[in-house]
Every structure is written in C-alpha cells, then in structure tokens.
Length: 319
Image (cartoon, rainbow, N blue to C red; front, side, top):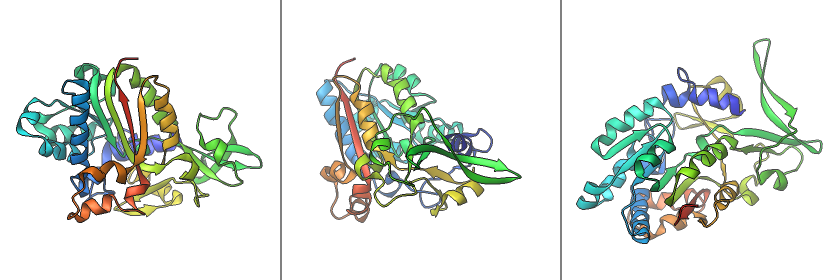
C-alpha cells in the first residue's frame, strides 16, 4: 500500500501532489485549519515569541509542507512590523509544483527548499519548526490481523483487475499499534516513511521547537470502532473509500490518521528534548477569539478540537 500511495501521490508526471493539487480550501479537494481561520497563525506566532525568549535570540521559522502558502501569509500578518522585517521564513516541500506556488505567494518573505537539511543549513541549525497536516500525507503501510498473525495489505493486478492482496510480513516495522490492536480482522496503518524521514533530518536540528499538528489520536484510542483502519481519500471534499481511491488514483488526496504514540516515542529518543502532547483545542485555546465562528470550529469537542492533536518538541541544546 505504501508503494501504491507513493506513486499515486508523488509520481512526477501523474502524482496528486506533484501534478494535480492546485488549491487547498473550498476550491480544492480538502481544507486545512489555515484555510478556515487565522487562529493557528496567531497561536504559532505566540509560541514562536515564547521560544525566542527562552533561547534569548530570534529563531527562524521553518514550515514543512506549506501547501498553498496560507499559513505563511497568516503568520506574516500576525507579526509586528519590526518582527516581520527581521524574521527569516523557510518553507520545505517535496512537490516542485507547490514549491513554485509557495515562492510566488510568499514573495520576499519566504524562501523555499526541497529538503529539511537544506533549510536547517541556511537557518544555522536552530529554528522554530512546524507542520500542519504533514505526517498523514506520507505513504503508509497497511496491515491486518488474521489467524493469529499480522499480514501486510497491498494491491494485486491480475487479468487487468486490481484487487486487495495480503501476505505474511516477517519483519514488521516498529509501531505501538501491533501490540494494542491484535484482534481478528483489525486493519492498521503505519507511517514508516514518515518515521524514516524524521530520523534523517533530526541530527541537523541543533535547537528550537518542533510543532506537529495533524488529525489522529494516541494509540490506545486510534482504532476504536474502526476495524477497517483509517485509510481514505478526498476528491472535491468528498470522502472516498479504499475501492474508490484505486479508481481515482492520481486525482485524489490519500491519507490515514496519525498514531501520535508512535510520534511521541520517536521524539523521546532524542535525550534531553522536552516532548508534550495535547489536543488541538488545548493548544489553540490561549489565542481563541470567542466571537469568531471559525475559531469555535477548530476547537470544537467532539470535532476538530479533539480529533486533531499537537505534539511539541523543544530542544535546548545540541544532542
């Protein structure tokens, strides 16, 4: 499944993120918090100011997966004149098409890079890093528990027909989900590609803050009442099943909920880092405008306020 998602999302000629996605928001296939309200921008700027005070110096912004640039523009609007004049804002995106769009939208305020390593090099190693709905966009491997063992799910092409296939997997990737959800028929996803990507750039980050915002839950509740897993697609804001994803591959977004327990465990491997997890509601609450309906939507429980979570990782010294 991860190989299928890699091609469907990132093929240079026909992948969704590489060749199709042009708009995020009501004109696109999906929306993000940044396209609905400036609340996230207000909160990130407040967090950035706190981090700069703690470090005793202004930290460059680095945004991973900047989409159409809405969040960068929102942050620019929240900065004071002198803050905006002195701020360095770097954006990292894998998609060449989105990088061109981000450079155009961001103008002189934004510098765009293809890799975290390149952005961190220009930032001097220390930065205020954040991403909104990034891990869910990484290709995910999918597994099912049958007959007392985990099988890996994928797709098979036979006689021109695409069908689901399952095969034994002797070397399971590392994930907390395998221990918690071993019940007959349960399907889970593991964002192993995100785990590898995270490990690659972490040694280049010498200090600052890293904020990860995405939909998902801790492992204990992630698959509650979800025996078929969380893999799904979106096309023109319409939810697609796995079967529909196959027929619209390259034209739709494909995603799966994030296992925040796995992300916590990854971050905790960096000795000395301060790692905290909270709901999106708890993270955004200090900056909520009670008169703004969009702010209420992003903090609603049940809803975006508790389905989205925020993982913060502070690094005060180079490991």
